[in-house]
Length: 184
Image (spheres, rainbow, N blue to C red):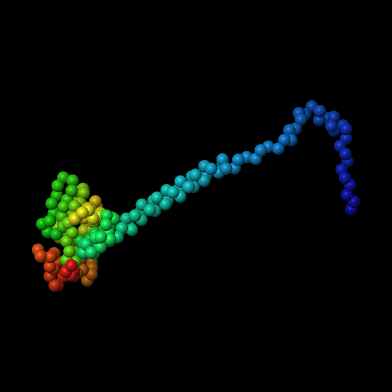
């Protein structure tokens, strides 16, 4: 099979294109791709940042350490002014409420902790009920800004085998031998 080159353009073809404007064959500069991608990249970074923020906020309370009153006292120096959760039972006769705060004592395992809570306590807050407090050590007391009341009546009915009574410490700090806690 023989390949023949195309015939050269005829003079008549060039003459017929005379009324067409000349064609500009100068190369065009390449489009800046970064300008189109920048909003997309910024949007993705914003979405990723928002997701990280939400994850950190939601996990923030899950990472608070949880201590019973006796453990919090034993680890007081290590805890410093870091936030943690403190569990104890509100001592009878210790609740003093003012306009913007509530002062009370919680006990657990033979130890007592003075608490100053900023704000109003929940409706179910009362003496002789277990509470979990969020806050930090502030001088000689635990400064709380959140009180969570344990619903012991329903829990006790459903799980009587899991409960061990903890007696309030006597005036001299001793606990009855039959209690679950020990002396400090």
